[in-house]
Image 1 (cartoon, rainbow, N blue to C red):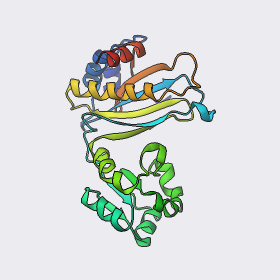
Image 2: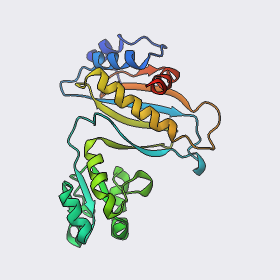
Image 3: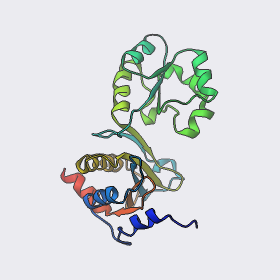
Image 4: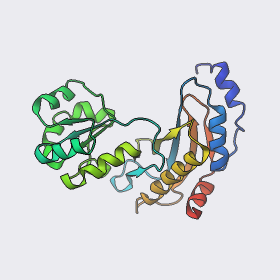
Length: 239
């Protein structure tokens, strides 16, 4: 295992090993243990009591974080005709409404953070799925990124405001950023609570036993801080 740097070790020394903190304590500690010169992201990692090998135990949904992610979100929309015009009017950063632009994306142009598509464009989008898929940019109905024309403006607005998708990975974990270290503690707490609420609501009917097995907060490059899952859910239920 690679040896950790001095700054990381100093930050990690502030975290009590084996302790599960309350959400408020963990957020304060995340801010205190961030040592990067840039404004680090705050990340949540949740281990769920589901089996990702089974289709009826998948966890995937979207959540709109009340205070966004603290960064400019660039949105690309695959649409044609009136839908393309509606996307531009709604503030899309780019619109792929012709073969040349779609080919440009397929050739590796990825200067966007979210891709949205209308249903009639999914055939063309599917042809460049090998580029979009591995980067988590493939529009998907379950992720709320394949929408009809009347829902385009709302979806673009939400994406720019802090709408994020979460999904179970192959190891049974969910990983989501909830903002920046520079956020006020209350902003991070409200974003955190919104995420936990959404993950709980997305619990599959086939899931048995303890659903949220562990919950961890950290900043970019910072040490992991364990959060008491019961306190995280209790705080949200009382909000």
